[in-house]
Image 1: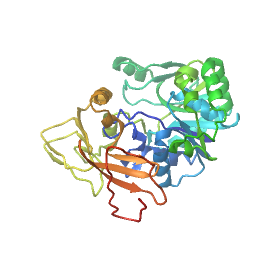
Image 2: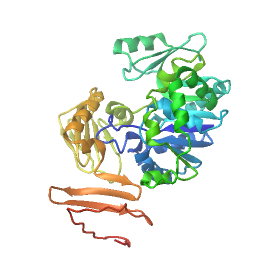
Image 3: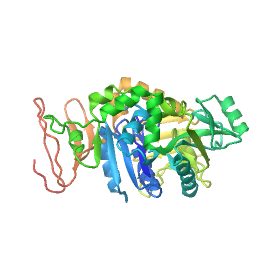
Image 4: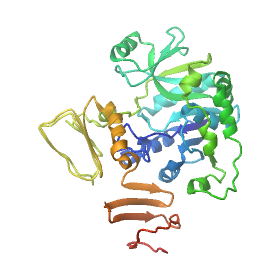
Length: 420
């Protein structure tokens, strides 16, 4: 079975930890690992190899993180722009054999019960081998209004009656009381060919555009960026920008799952979270013996000072944070931005990011520490007259050539040997 890992994202829900160039799956949250790394590790026990669907700008970041774990049999499909999940999954399936079983997973979810997870995947695999499209329904533990719901048949537990949009709290509570509604996890299992047949039947425009986009690309283009060059090997499929533009944008739920009569659901309880807000992060970080949830809990991280303060989420990377007589707050400190939110309101972070994009768009796009194919750079000082960066170049790599007419560059090599 092949694990298709959806690795896109805009980096809005956990801002300022996440950014466009560092969406939450790549942020190191737990014990120095990212959710992306955990996803790859988790699925290697149930799949023979993985196909990672990534934005071209995040390809090298993914490569860096894969090199830090015991990953094997990895292939990439690089999208120059995102067109939502239906085209992404279709492109991946078109690159496989029709009889290949695929297990589609997001890259930014947390699963703490591996045994229950593997049992659910095994059940889904059996249903998929019978030419069904299988989705995974998470047993709800509270009336969540940020998820879609799956209504299952009470008599035939794997049969899907309907998909429900994100409800209000009263409706979500009614779903829980009925007992046959599940959170839509965004995970799927099916044969590649069966999915493509259903896509062709129910969303033919997406099918045709994806089929055309996957045609061989001229590898001898005169102008190639570093991302283009990454596409020219046996383990990477790169989709042309112009071909991606014409693909209709749609989710797999709208394009296929809500229309097909082959859909089954596997209800499961695997200690799952999509970590889609700081409230969800608080729930995962909070320890029974602590009055506040602190991230990261590392020996070299500054420890917050909390006086008569409780039920707060505190995220700090560099500076010491002091709290006095406050409770039920989410406090997130990074090198260039601070977020303070009341717990229960962290879904509004998207509104903050929308304002940031108007006032200071670089704060929504990138951290001061930025990842590039050749290494990283960090902006230490920035003004109208000068800019100071700390640059780390990987062994054997080189920066892209640039020419400037209105500034001088001075390099100080503090470690290693460099040719400037």
